[in-house]
Length: 209
View 1 (cartoon, one colour):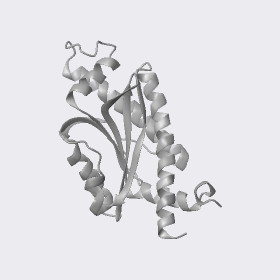
View 2 (cartoon, one colour):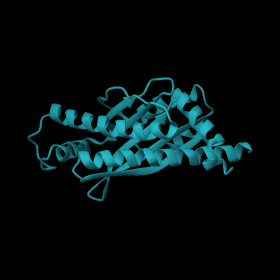
View 3 (cartoon, helix red, strand yellow):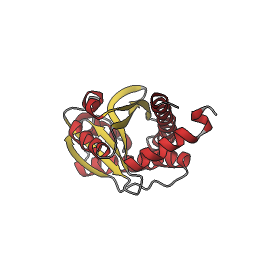
């Protein structure tokens, strides 16, 4: 198998793995939101480091974020991003309130979003780990506001220290069928990327043998 074929196979492998992980997360979110919120895999980027900035999805501006890291030997991050208006809207829906209500404290909003990150993130990693026959244990979620592009670039730099290409997967949210400005970004660490590359080159499902 030449390098081009290997890259295509690895990208295909990532797409399948992340689609299955997204399905697990979508089922958990469906239960958690009472069927109000859905999610699906949007795209997977795997590009040379010098092209990473151009390939990053548009997440400019100050965003509310919930981040889970899995810092074992495989490593990586799950980054939930919301603009301010939509983070409030999601929190109110999850709390069973009117989306336009203004009687919910910032602390309660934060709690609802972090619990969402915990439920969806754990399901996502469980779906991925089951396929890789390993264990991915996330950190407790943490909540903050920052510029989305900056946070993604920092995560990608961790990959750039050990790889000549970077990879990021994006999952989109929909509320009652309407696509929202909420996203879940998956940024694998070097160890996890190595595991997937081995799977891509050894599994008959991906090699065609």
